[in-house]
Image (cartoon, rainbow, N blue to C red; front, side, top):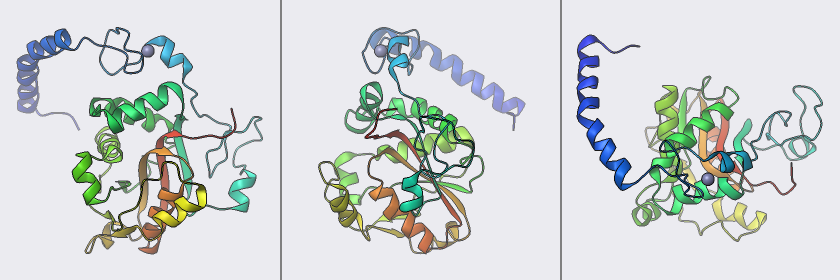
Amino acid sequence: MGLTKSGKMASDWWRGLLAPLAAVVDLVYPPACPSCEVSTGTHRSLCPACWSRIRFIERPYCEVLGLPFSHDLGRGILSADAIANPPPFDRLRSVAVHDGVVRDLVHGLKYRDRTDLAPMMAGWMLRADDGCVTGCDGIIAVPLHRMRLLSRKYNQAAELARHLSHLSGKPLLPATLMRVKRTTRQVGLGAKAREDNVRGAFAIRKGGEGEVFGKRLVLVDDVYTTGATVAAATRALKKAGAAEVSVLTFARALSTPI
Ligand SMILES: [Zn+2]
């Protein structure tokens, strides 16, 4: 939907007011590559060298786990892992392999208050989503426990989900899923320990059942590692009657090179 004439005038007015401010911001914080800090022409964009080092995850891949195949076996093919251990979610899609530049972006957003990176990262996620955002009824971020949120100030997954919602026009469901159990950090834990750690950690907010029952949802996180966290979150959503859960992450840990 376009802006009304008065809306457009107001937005032009704001732009006019903010332009000098943007110039000052550029002087104080000149546009730089968020990974290697070399100067770039615009904010929130990588330099060509960093961009070329990113290992994007593209087809051919397993339709469920999004795991890249070395050979194209045709559409609709599942990996052996997806057949032997079907995940609770319906599909998993990620932008790129979690290493190098991609790890820098994830760390910047998560630990260095670089929330300004979220719009760019969400834009990439929207291109890697394989249509699951376009076809969904709502977007949900993997929540932090409220005590962790207090110490961290913001939830990096929620930042990505907020911008995904803004870019796609799909509803954000910010309070539907809750983290009801304080878990230890997953970093450094093995697959089985991660599973035990997050079991029963998620629940639907009282009164939020209608936002889940019969709905096609996109569950957003920054990184997919063993999948224990998104699997536990998906189980809570499916238990509440979600019709479909697609997991969308920015980065994905891959043990085998592609
Ligand atoms: Zn760079």
